[in-house]
Structure formats: structure tokens, C-alpha cells
Image (cartoon, rainbow, N blue to C red; front, side, top):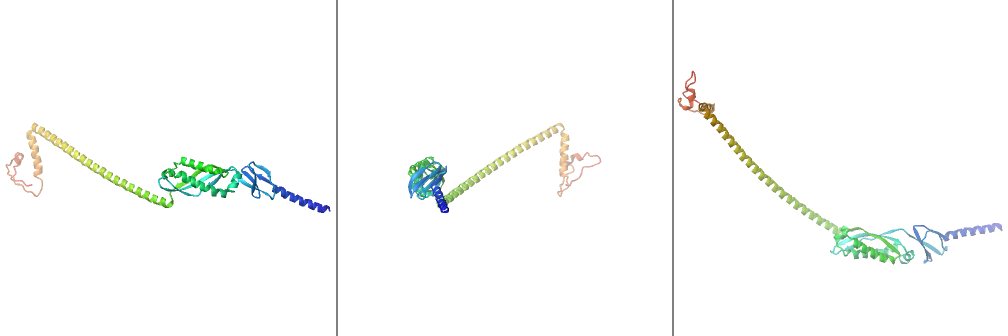
Length: 297
């Protein structure tokens, strides 16, 4: 009898342990909990700590208190200048009302299905008022404020708070991007050709101007050289004239010597002169000699 009683007590203790374990649950600091009974919400627990629930009847659904992220799908936006842009964005949010969040979207997967269309509509509405250049260049703070305000109003009905909305990428679709790239490449090639043509024309002008200046400088140098040569010849003539005026006889003798040096050089030319020619007058008074009858050169 005592052994059977001990067995019953042991079984009751084990069952009590399982019941106690099933009735206790812990909410961490980064969590908030919703207690549901057969799917019907009973109470919300926002503070961390140890809590109780009815085992086998009530369940606990945990929600994160921290900031969560949602990467929205890429959306095509039509701008004011009729350009199509692909916009990638992301949303940062926080669950502020677990009960409303559970009643409207149940979980994060359900939230994506409800929030993603709102993000797409907000982006189209805000970016549709801007041109493509403003969106791509990042000049869009007012549009992002409009998107944030539109999502915040919708988020309150889902039990969440929008913390931030950002655009990761805003660019043309791939087909349009390739066409734009080819057009830009063609335009840059045209500009490069124009620059080369302009450079070649400028180079020709510079070379022509350099050739003209060279011609002018050479002509001026030749003119100056001729002037200096003329001045030198004039100075030489003046010096010779002064020398001739000082001693005309010696000057005549010197000139005759120069003439003899040039006329009596060996060559194939024959020259016949009279012995009493004025050309040989300085040979008449040479000691021991007579004037030549003829002279060959």
C-alpha cells in the first residue's frame, strides 16, 4: 500500500512539473508577447520577466521590440519627364502594438504582403512629381518625407511605427540603361572628335604662325646681316681709301701685287700682254732683270 501511494505521488509530481512548466514562460528584454487562447488574444505583455498562462489552452506569440527591416521589391516609377526608373527601397519599422499587429497581419510575412504595396504606391506618388535627374542625383528629400508620411499613416493601422525609409538604388531599366549608355558613348565620341579637330586646327594655326615668324625673323636677320656687311665693306673701303691717301704709291704697289697673285696663278688659261704694259711697270726696275716679253697664266 505504501509503495502504491509513493508511485501515485511520484506520478502526480511529474504531472505537476509538466503542468508548471507549461504554465510558465519568460519574456526577454528585446521581446513583447501576446497570450492567445485557441487563437483568440487574451492579453499583451510588454515588460520582460516571468509570466503565467493556462497550459494546453493558452499559447504565447512573441514579437520583437527591436527595429526590423523590410526590403521592398523593385518598382518602376514614371517621372515628370516621362522617364521610367527602377527604384529599390527598404523600410525600417518597429512593432508598437502587438495586439493590432496580430489582428491585422499575424506575422512579418503577412506584414510584407500589406506594407509592400503601400511602399510602391507611396514611391510612385512622390517620385512621379520629380524628373529623372533629380531622382538619380539624390535631390529628393521632400519626396522621401512624403513617402515617410504616407507609410506612417498606413503603419499605425497595422500596429507598427515606421522608423526610416531609404532608397537603395534609382536607375533606368537595363534596356534603357544600355541605350542611354550607347547614346552617351556616341555623344562623347562626337565631342572627342570635335576636340581633336579643334586641336588639329589650332595646331595648324600655331605651326603657320611659327613658320611666319620664322620667315620674318630670317628675313630680318638677312637684312641686318646685309646692313652689317655693307657697313663692314664701307668701313673697309674707307680704311683702304685713307691708306691710299696717305701713300698712293704704296697703295698702287699693293694693288698690283694682289693683281699679280690672281693673274699669274697656274691654270689652263693663256693671257698675252705687251711687255711695256702698265700691268708690268713694277718689273721694269727689278735689279738684274728685264721686263718679260709675255706672261702666261
